[in-house]
Length: 295
Length: 168
Image (cartoon, rainbow over all chains, first blue to last red; front, top):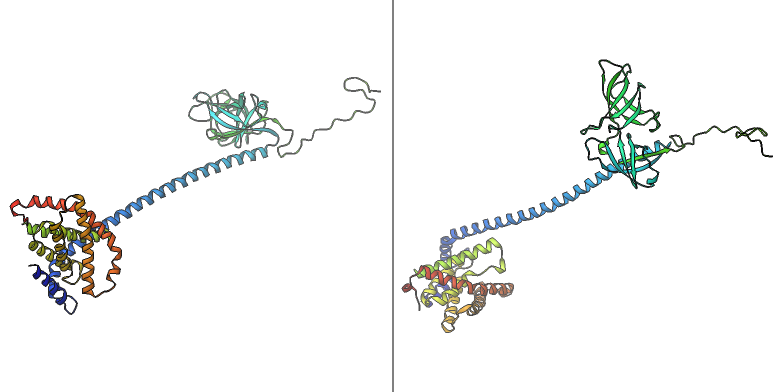
């Protein structure tokens, strides 16, 4: 049997050749098993494609993860830049304010906390330097206008009574109508507002008019913007009309402020205030103290 | 039954060989399942039955490989005879024994195929071209034999009744 099979193999190998290289035996065997070959090959190809898809999907997933991480990093960077830009704008506003109000001695402070009570409108500020100079009652301003006044100080921090606190009262004048009144904080827990009291009934005020400090109360410097009139309502009877104002400064988003230490002795544009020179008393004239001239 | 089962196992090995090669593109490292089955035939089948199965499987391998008909027939027949001869003289039992059979069979398979190819194709550089195949193909056969033999033995025991087994 072995010899027969060897012979068969030899015959196939050496004599089963046609014009195309494959003889009749070879063609028969090929035809019989070709369908099986095709089936197995196509199944294997499907598996290969599936595997390739899986691999590429894994790669895409990994790439997606990397891109997400990159996106997150860029978002963080953008947020950081937004924060820096916002801080830059705020600080620029503060610098502009300091530049415009050279008549005032200003001390920078950073807002470090707000009142937790819904009844009071108070914020804490951290003083940048020289906290000893800051005293209760000193006005606190921001680039938009007036913020409030210092209520108390402790080391490097101070408590500021906002203009919307019910304990705050500011002598004000309306910019256009020149109507006078008193801005008293409403102390409402859900918004920052103040009401204008003692506004004359016949004063021709309009909504949107700016409200400024008069400087007559001896506490706040003259010409600081306090707010803008939001509502006006004449009382049915009486001498006055009801009005409300909204602070010029966004008190909810305030981060840096200036404490006004006092007048600087300069004009707002920075030139020295020209004090009238005292007339020189003529020689031999009696001194103000009544004493005579020193021989 | 035993004959048909062995032949089907060989055919399955060929299909698996083709499938693995095509699906996973293993190239040199694709396992030569047909060689494993031929070695197993040498340890379990009679001279006649094994030779017939090896020759016919070789013909199918030729059809699958696109090689001249007879090349794998010769190869299969020679490998079976080698395996049968060796295993009739040496008892390849246990893991190490089968490893050794795998080593001998793998080397012989590659050598025989190269020799036949050299004779048939008259290609003097064939041996050089397949040099890089030697190590992976032999390693794969060596690794496959100790695991494949027990599986095939158990499958055969499962399907074939004891009196039918050709214990020659």
